[in-house]
Length: 388
Ligand code: GLA
Image (tube, rainbow, N blue to C red; front, side):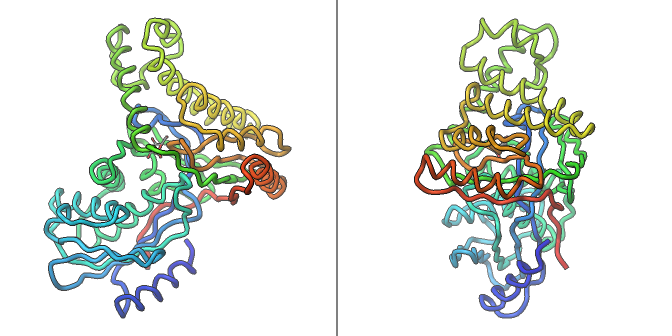
């Protein structure tokens, strides 16, 4: 974790409130490497925590009000320590307010606090800055409220903040990736059993992010709509298959092929994406184990193609980058990362080719959109932790 960021926080906190914070926590952003929208379908995902994140600094204060400071934009929000959901605050404050409210709902005793945060995750890049905010807040506030909360519960607290305070019916991928990240490792999660294991990326390959900085309209409602269609498809399969179907995780390709022609075409396409993604994560894990980066990269390209055509959660900006990535030497694979409808492409690239590939991606983007996209290498990194 970045000492520069911690020092910057100490300085900024002192300028804001005077003195030092009592508790500090750091939580990283994440990349989704393979397994798109599979989390809420009880499927599989390969992801990684990355080397940019959010630092949260907290100190108890007197009074009945909590103060929350977004240091990057110098904006402060206040809410009631006893009834956090009755406050009117800016939308960024909802993630922390939601985490805190959920902790009270789980028996935490209200306590007024001042909290400040700052970070290095580019906003709107699809790198889960909101989960990093939630998880850094959850760690720091659990300490403040003297609550013992295990990591999976912490992830669920973050998810509840998204559902109830931000209106996104997300799965647990972002929070679990932020909590369970490990240096140099991919996080492989099973969202039925909530079992998490780590798989080494292997030497010689790096991840590159190309951020379109695009956020298409109605992303939240489009995300929720995708989830509803998946649930509709799962209900259909449950009604026709001889075995129990709790989620699309329980549907095989053969079953999909047999029944898809009789289904609502849109639900069938959405289901195809999920069934395909689960298959790709399982195949991809085996390829990583054998060091087959070429094979793994092909699955990343397939995943993007499935997003583009079946799940329809890509957009022209992301497609431009992935199409360019296909032509570049040293690029194993590339795909959209996360919810979709904008944000970033993640590319798996041979270390030796990374700089050249990044330059070519920027140029390819500029050719179409008149300005380059932002690119950066990201390193699979350690998960969220209390500091000091
Ligand atoms: C967003 C959500 C996650 C997950 C991904 C898509 O990041 O927050 O829960 O569904 O999209 O895989």
